[in-house]
Amino acid sequence: MGKVDQSQVGVFVSYVNLLKHSVWTWVEGDLFIPEDWFNEVHAQLRKDLGIPDDLRFKTKIEIGLESLNRVIANGVPFEVICFDGLYGRSEWLRSQIQQSNHIYMAEIPCNTNVYLSKPQLGVPEIVQGKRGRHPKRLKVLLGQQPIKVRDLLNSGDLKWLRVRVRNSERGEINDAFAMQRVWLRYEDKVVEEWLIIRKESAKKHSYALCNASPDTAIQKLAWWKCQRYFIERANQDAKSEIGWDEFQAQKYRAWQHHLSLTTLACWFVTAVKLDFERNREVDPELAKQFEIEVLPMLSVANIRLLLMTVMPLRELTIGQVIEQIVAWFIKAKK
Image 1 (tube, rainbow, N blue to C red):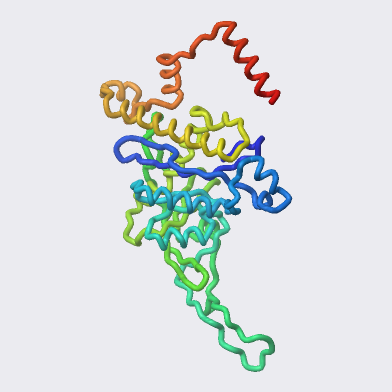
Image 2 (cartoon, one colour):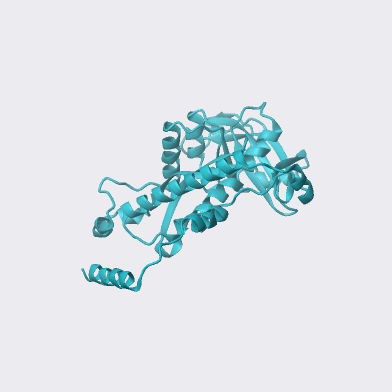
């Protein structure tokens, strides 16, 4: 996400919980600053924008992991970490999360290489009479070749299972999934993981890797695979309704303050939605009338409309407006 016209890109962490009531909200975030901003040519620009002197360049992947670690340190409970292909393709990030004993569901590109049987790593034997340096690096032995995950679609080995992804206001959403245990090479290690393929349309498939245990239920894997929809809902709500897209300042601290206020507003909206879900009385006949299992939730736009109704904007007199304009002119002149 980011405000393109000001070249501002942020990395955000959303919390999603759908077990009893539907909850999605921002909980963490930080600003991504391009690497060339940290050279000496931009030293004065960094100073003008209030970027701390001790701040160093970090990739989006590194910022994402730091944000996750802050969420974990603050005791936020969760079951699985889900992220899109930008982060999912990073072997380093997946390894870091694996080492922290957390489960991830990582979206990956369709050209990701996997092995269908466990590859054997070793240093190739020295061939007598062959010139050149002796091999020292670990390689896959026995001629085992990886396969791109997209090529599995034509292998005929996948077993597809239709799973109910979720109930929605328009009825059930069911998609076809294929799950298979695969092996991947991480530097000098071979790791076994789940490969999850979701058929979203006749010509569109998405792929993900998950480090959950081999006995994890297929339905749970499919459920985890679909949670990024609600992460995108959290992003959309923050931008379109809560005010993230209204950021106008350029200073580093102003960006952090705007993020804090936006996140706080996200939490407030979530609290209102939870209160509404817990206390509303649902008429079973109403669900039958619309032929759905789940009645529509209170949306962010609904809450914004309610706030505008109960907390209307104060009307200003013409004198007050003139005073504010004059004050703005004086401030701008300085």
